[in-house]
Length: 45
Figure 1 (cartoon, rainbow, N blue to C red):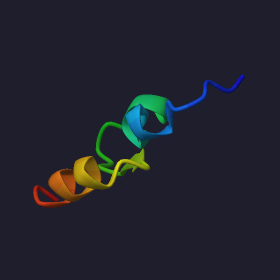
Figure 2: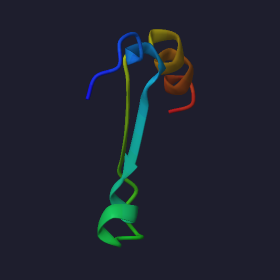
Figure 3: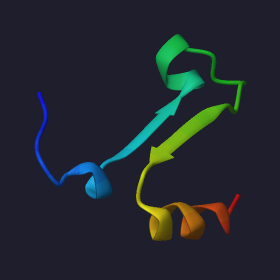
Figure 4: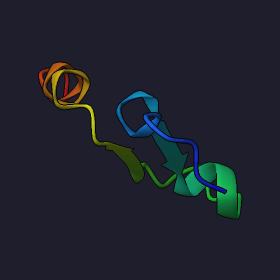
């Protein structure tokens, strides 16, 4: 499924502890094509 023009509005966030029940591990992923959102998030990393 593809919705035209939505690429700049999608943010995907996933964490290893949630997916594999490993609560001592702090590994996650943040994916977006929206450059201003990405730059803002990276300020806090």
